[in-house]
Amino acid sequence: MDFAPRPTSVRAVRVAPLDMALRAPFGISRGSLGTAANVLVAVELSDGTVGHGEAAPFPAYNGETQSAALGRLAHAVKWLPGRDAADWRGIAAEFRAAEGPACGSALCALETALLDAVTRSAGVPLWRYFGGAGTVLETDMTVTTGTPGEAAEAALDIRRRGIRIIKVKIGGPRGPDADLDRICAIHEASPRSPLILDGNAGLGRAEASLLIAGLKSRGISPVLLEQWLAKRDLDGMRALAGESGWRVAADESVSTAAEARLVADAGAAQVINVKLMKAGIAEALEVAAVARQAGIGLMIGGNVESVLAMTASACFASGLGGFEYADLDTPLFLAQNPFEGGFTLDGGRVSVGHIGAGHGVRPRSLLL
Image (cartoon, rainbow, N blue to C red; front, side, top):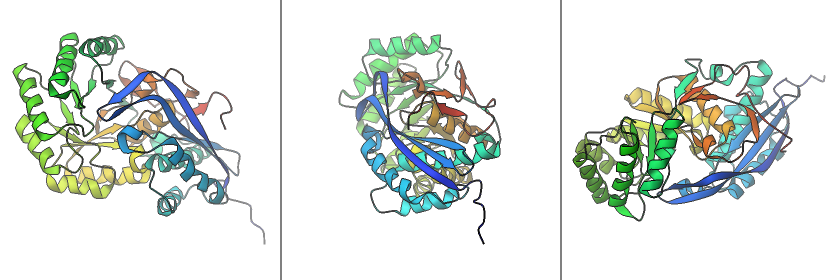
């Protein structure tokens, strides 16, 4: 006997490069990005519903590349049709277990497209699918690497946008004195802005101590020290919190739930930056659960992503609830927006409450 396919059965999967120019290079301690070389994924269901996902590899952050993401996703094009998209966790597990190097951004893109398709088909907003705890977050905006003058101008621009919290990229070859000069310039330009100082694992312990001393001598107290030290230096991270008296966030140190447990057991951080691009959405849910159980605060962040991936992250964090910090600013760094819909931004207020189904983002034109 023949049976009609489930409404959430996958009919087709399409994958294409998604290249987006940046207004200026996005620099971190270990390199910079001049163009967002991302990947767009579309999953079409048997009822005609199409969901979209985005991979945002960042070579300087974790070594992932667009070509690697495209290669991993090309396999899904072959074996995913006929599968039930509602079993997105099972599909994700199979994708992770497939041969080839791990690529968290590719997995994230696939999971996002599957979930977008399923929730669109059901008429459920993605933020509600994740729990419906809330619909609003407050994002920071980043000052990337550069000179003190450039940093001060960037801080003024952030305040003109109505964004309150400033995140500052630090670390790199110029050393802590250069970092201190930039931070002081930002503090002078916007003295009331809470500062998050993000090292992207680019400082050593001695450099960190010098920078802490310099900040204290100038009366600057950051709200968060994000991943200053090497990702495996958990003892150093614990000591950093003790030496400074400021909260420490783990970013590169935590991609998986197992790594979150190591950080918790070591007392290495008071906050964990959860990024869907690290190891996908299913794993991010597990990371958040470990952090909550350990009493560790949560931050939602990302790589250099369009409004598509950033809206998925906003739905994730607001829907789950309990995220103290949000770093969802990278659409503001893009020179183009190939999408329509997604979160709204009013100053630093990110809102997804208006989204009626899925993550609410669509390509402006046929990109696949």
